[in-house]
Every structure is written in C-alpha cells, then in structure tokens.
Length: 297
Image 1: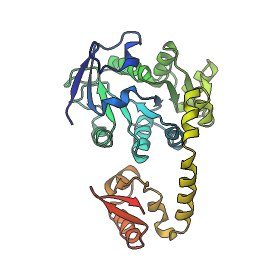
Image 2: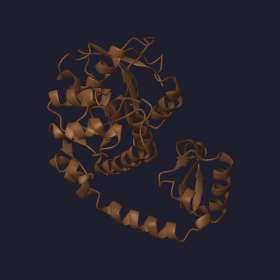
Image 3: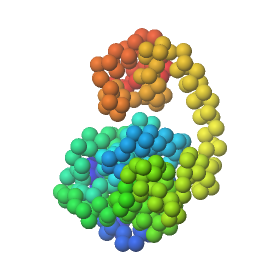
Image 4: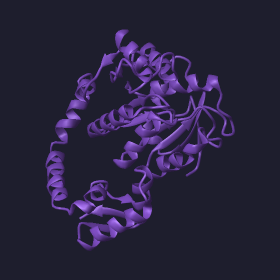
C-alpha cells in the first residue's frame, strides 16, 4: 500500500475535517481513504484499561458495527487497540489517527496492528511528515482529528485530566455528542468518565443509547433485519459443534478469517488453534479459502 499526501485544497480531503477549528493543511494517508467519509464513531479510553473496560469496549464496538458504522481511534495501547482489534475481528474496516509520521509508528509495539488495519481494508492517517516523532503536543493535535472525523465520541475509561478527557472536551467544542460508559467510583480509571457524565456527557448502558441520537442509523438497523436470522442460524449451528472445538468455531466469521489473526487477536496458542481448525475442517463445519483463511460452511 502506498502512502498518499492529501492537501486541504485537494478534492480527496475529508469533508468533515474542513469544518473543524484549525484543520490540518495536509494529511498523509495509507490504506482505504474512502472510508474517511463514512459515518465514523470514535471509541477512546485509558491506555491502562481494566478488564471491565476491555469487556465493555468489545461489547459496545461489536454492537455499534451492526449499524453500518466504522470505528475511529488513536491506535494507542489499551482501549484504542481493543476498539481497532474488535473491528478487525468483525471484518469491518477501522480508522487510526497517529500522533507521529506514518514512517515512525507510535507506539512501536503496535506496528503489527498498523499493518492489520491496512490489510483488512482500513486506513491510517497523520497530519505530520512521515518521519516525525510523537510528542506531547501532537497527542492533543491528533485528538482534534479523531473527534473531527467522527459523528460522536464514546469514552470507555478515562482517568482525571487524561488525554481521553481532553478529546471529549474537543468533541464537545465541535458540537459532537460525547457518550460515556459509567464506571466504579472506586476505580481511578473511571474518574474521568464519571466527571464527564456529571458535566453533561451522555451516560450509556447499551448501544441503543448511542444510536437513538442518530435517526439515519436506525434505518440501517431496519435494513439489516435479515441479519437476525443469520445470527440465530449461527447460534444453532454453534450449539451442535463438539464443545471441545466450539470456542474456536465461534471466532470464525462467515466471511472468513486468517488463522494467525485468530491466535494473535485472542492471545491463543497457534498450534492449538490449528488443531481445532483441522478437526472443524474434517467435520465439514469450516472450509479453507485463499490466504490461509477459513470460513464457516
């Protein structure tokens, strides 16, 4: 995939970014730039997330993807990475905005995630020269782009005075809805989210609390009525799989997934995954596709 430079005056510059305060004069893009003009929902949160945060981030992301939305985040460790990986597992393209140049990936430990985002049809963007290093001011500048490209921001976990809270403030200044998952009062990672709720952010306990703010997204849900039958059929099929192989079977979407992705995205042993895959294939429950991918039959 070739990196592309898009200037503010170019036709391909994302329309939503033209309308924010202090828009970037240019952006560097790698991947499927077309989705930058889709309905994007920002999902952000703590780098040091709790299990509570991981659980609800995955749950909300999966549910949001049923409404023809793409998730945008900052590719940081923690909640950002969980949001991106949940999209990848669902085979839905995701958008990442970096606080560094595209030839100087930050954080470096997420370079594999960077490559997966692009290979799965997503896009990574930055307003900085390709070799630029990340710095404290760039995180805040990056956050205005995350908020600017989105139709709203979901905050999963945030400490007091965190970068996540700053992004929420930017979104509010851009007149974008800010949604917060409430947290335990004794958990420091929930201090920011609970304060945002106190100060006017929208408390959400389920995806409908978000979707209800966008009339046009309800239409997407109605148009996807056929998906309910597919999901029910999948559940029935899953229940007749030998329980020894059911866990791996349930990680395989109908569209197909690479074996390495099953292992890496779920912290599983690759050899054990392959044993399960082999048995499921022999039972005729899955089939092999090009690129070492497997899909349900």
